[in-house]
Image 1: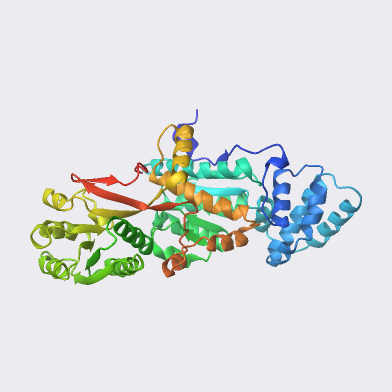
Image 2 (image 1 turned 180 degrees about the vertical axis):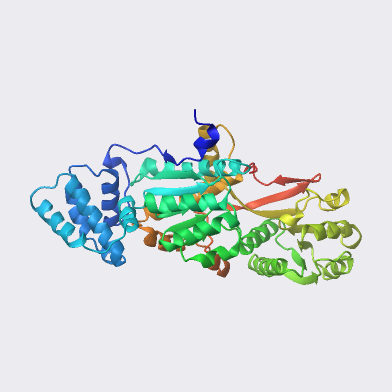
Length: 462
């Protein structure tokens, strides 16, 4: 009897239900080429398949593909149409196409990718080991997005889940299986930067698309122009924080205290820009050393400039020191910051001083009706509330399914569709950071009685 741990390491073909038996109940992508390919993928043995194949061969979208991909698409369509029982002129035309393309130098991976299209999505995640909870809840959120697509759209999408076991070498090996043996053109994974890098390298060699749902290394984008990240960068976090202050106190004046580290310096610039965009007056900025102990002079200087809100952009240790010194130098400061303000691990004195402080973390929480709908469907499907990783899975799934629904035929076309989903700022474009396709904000917390209280009822951790 195979143990459960070993079962989880096998390739799991997660066939997502929801396909309709009637064409009229399905929506198809807006371009004729994408519609025909969806029909051939979903119903390769249909009576109409030969005529779909003949029509697909002459679509202008195919002429815009790279020569190997173009030949592979036509070869696949001709074989599919003939296998469906083409007769008469259709049979003659498809045999002509078959004869003209079979001699083309097309490698086996290109042929498999043409036959698979974007209908099979590869996923490499830790499903066993210490990080299995993260991988499993991410996959559950991803499934909901794919089920949502399959209920209404063609082609019917399938997830192929592989367990990386949290090991970058295992993840890289299984990525190669997906790319070479299964013809996958879209890969989702991994959760951590060190494990994602070999996946990115493997996908870019064959021109596939990779979406990393939670890796934070900003250098992943240099591995290829089809590597995308669900990355919540400083610009997005700063804008969310500035909006929170503007909503609570629209006439606030802001003082910024930042450490001299590169990360905090870039955050200070992002916060200043976001505050100005939100109509808030930035009256001063103080830079202190990362190793500083006494920051009362910097706090007093900002207070004297009549700042009413303090953006504290320093490492956790320095945040604790600064918080403890607020009572004497700036007792009524409204404190805002990033996750360095998390009260976990802070002293009792710092927790007391940070009472009412607001901070944002680099995870998404959906808002409005999409949040309520997602939470209801998730709990119905899995019997538990969604988590941060569930939300990330759903948002990544939406990015892929929407790209397919817009008419992407292959990885190159999906790559261009995903580029249209990037944050419209320098950071978003450089990192190829995907913007959520439903209303979502970075998670926001308020410190109450020494604890971080989420501004929304979910997501939970992990």
